[in-house]
Image (tube, rainbow, N blue to C red; front, side, top):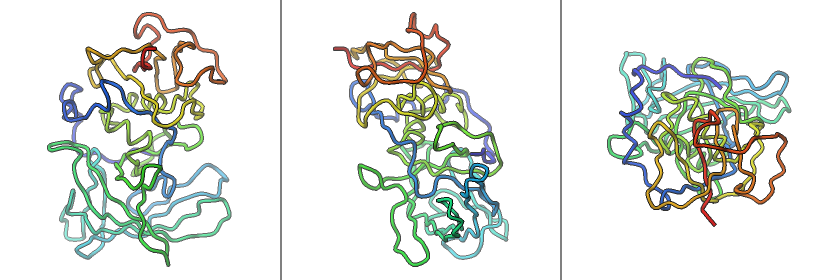
Length: 302
């Protein structure tokens, strides 16, 4: 729900270090999904401040402490892109794999019953997405006061890592919430927020493209948070800024074009599911990107 401090200047789109490092999933096509994110700890604020849910929702997360694996408390923490950095009382800054073993302790109310629960989040491992990548992957484990450590990101395909993103999203509408300092989402790699980072739409540099991508991954045509697909459907993804480019031998039919609010046009004969029941009226797509969309999707040609 909020943007974190970033101490690195944004780089130009053509300086992305993920281009060439990403793996195509199958001949220019990528796997979509229905999950927006994992649901065990959807967002939090660094530096000891409460992150409230919607008004009167009875949901909030409060970071109580952040302790380094080497011992000693963190006095200030921030994100530099997707890398978590933390400063101790002596002014030493830790980042990357130096944060393995660190534990964040939370208090939260997460189901509207006003019962205060304790959760601990442990950084079990830290790696880069690829050599030289600016995307960091965090193996995160979570436990309550009496439980055992479990993977934070434990989805349909088993445990996976998280990417830390300096923003928070409304889990109902799928909309990025207006910036509030120090907000962080632990974005699971097998769900929309994390997938879109891996695809090269880094929200710390390409926020609108990333938000657009979260819509298209889930076939959220109307931008109302409702998906119109099933997991593991193959889609072709292309944009005009060179993050995703068409494969020369990829055969596909244009499904839709997208902006941060949903689809800007839709070809009803080429949707991922036949005759989806959608709540909005959208024009058919014409020439590529004439609709004003930022990203185009396609489905395998029949």
